[in-house]
Amino acid sequence: GENVEQHPSTLSVQEGDSAVIKCTYSDSASNYFPWYKQELGKRPQLIIDIRSNVGEKKDQRIAVTLNKTAKHFSLHITETQPEDSAVYFCAALYDKVIFGPGTSLSVIP
Amino acid sequence: EAQVTQNPRYLITVTGKKLTVTCSQNMNHEYMSWYRQDPGLGLRQIYYSMNVEVTDKGDVPEGYKVSRKEKRNFPLILESPSPNQTSLYFCASRYRQAGGTQYFGPGTRLTVL
Image (cartoon, rainbow over all chains, first blue to last red; front, side, top):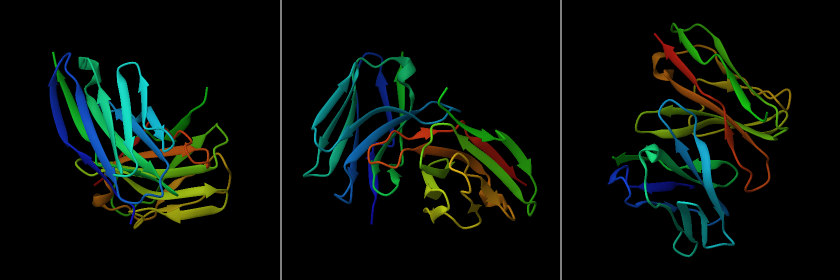
């Protein structure tokens, strides 16, 4: 069935360092992979997405890479700041959106 | 302003007392869904709807009902709430086409005593 795994479940980095979150998906039928950021007490919000016809996409300090052969995709945050602290969810779109279990990122000032 | 709204935002109720959480979107999205979020379990889909009068079960549909009589509204109904339905609930919507951005409502925190 359709499943998305996400690692690590928690991640602490020093301010200014990079953070990487990795996801794998089970069913190759998906062509769309969004990433959501959820701050404490708030709704998930889309921060970046990637479609299967590209291997990498960047938006300022955030980048996402996709390896369709290996069914892996990753979120990279460079020059982390305290406001990057949140829970991050990867997802894959099939008939419905399947979310990974989330990664709690803490950026230590 | 494009948005998904939910009401109420907070609700404390007792076991067995029927309740409805409303969800409305103003973006003419075909696809709407409900999720519950529990600590350590991420976002789990309860029900979804691809269009008016079309609904399907998600991963955790037991104890919930939905309806989609109008395109903009997708209420979540708990006929007989139980304490294990205490959770944070999110409604979401998007265009049905692949790759459409999914927008979330602000969330409803439900406590069932």
